[in-house]
Length: 137
Image (cartoon, rainbow, N blue to C red; front, side, top):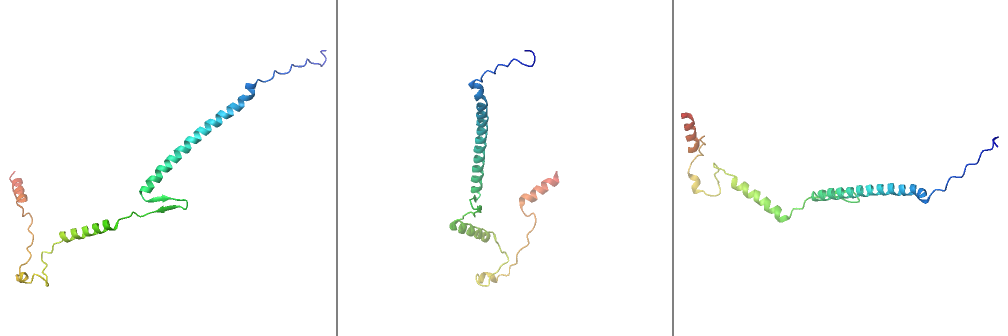
């Protein structure tokens, strides 16, 4: 009896159903957390890409399947003509030619031989009076 024969161990008790399903429950919880995090990353990326796309579209840059297309802002013909005429009218009104004498029109007025007068510095009364008041102080 004590010579090499051991008492057989009793078999372990059977595992409960909860202990059998615990690894599966842990796996499902981990996968759920990963799916939740992945979903929110996906939503953030979509939101950022939509915002960037809207900003680029406002600057006439559009992303398509073929690549990127850059557009030119459309200017209506009427607005273009108005702006051009406005610049021409401003240039015409701001231009002065004091010594210009036409050979084609205003013939009787051109017979006077008047020369253009040179401009004198500080001819305004306000600037000359302020100088004299400063020099007296």
